[in-house]
Length: 339
Image 1: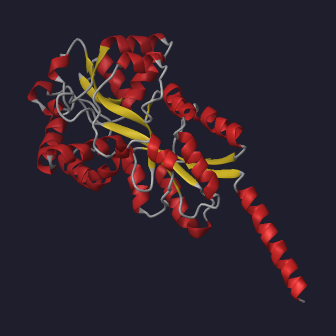
Image 2: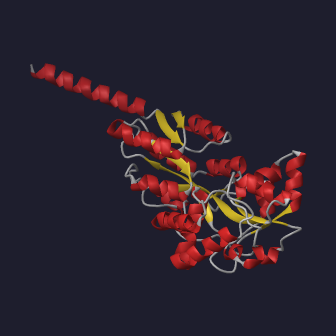
Image 3: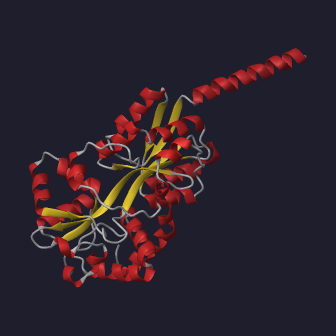
């Protein structure tokens, strides 16, 4: 009887070991990054590790709701998305598990990681102006967008978009809530039209003279700069770019980032994937594939558009802190009529 129990126990142990090995051979990724260039990023991970990636793509809110509904039975190992406020929102829902990794701590700067998630690439939110109707010296800061000289010249995407909410959250951190609300009201008063469209639409509107100035993420500019289309070249010929706040706290940056989920069935594979995203090769994919800056400072970038945009002083505010003022930024925008 004892031998039978022992044999059964050993058999059970062997089965669990096999299952663990099998589980470690795959990774279930829930992704809100919708860039075709990421295909090479993921396939290279599989080539290096032999770990198969099963990917589900959807919008952030849809994925977060799915993870919550799946609960302890969720198959998701890693959640990856763009924007610090979205990552912080996911963290507030309690879906992430802390990852202890000397590799991640050594390669990713402290201000570009939070307790439970890591940033892997950055994009800057810059000022884009029409070279015929606006002078560069008049739009050197985010604060300048609220000035009377730009009456009827500002266009923007929705104030409820995470990119703008993160900027508002940063402004609150640097200038205070009261000053940020005054700024938001004056920016709205300077609108050439009601907010609509995405960042690329704003850049094209500036080039067409529909408005004189806007704010856009750098990778949208880089896409137009790298384009072979005549119409895109014409757009870029008419606009100029300013790195805002170079004499104060620096240009606001946002991130793409990821974290391991607390109910991840393949935790070993999840850690390997997060560490892979900080590797030189993966960091180069972010830069050259989607025109983002790598977070690992030693990685060399070979991207003509990013080279043309040049070097700049980035805001060193810890990205994890943006969450604490993001909700307040949205309320300020709502009161200001920035919708």
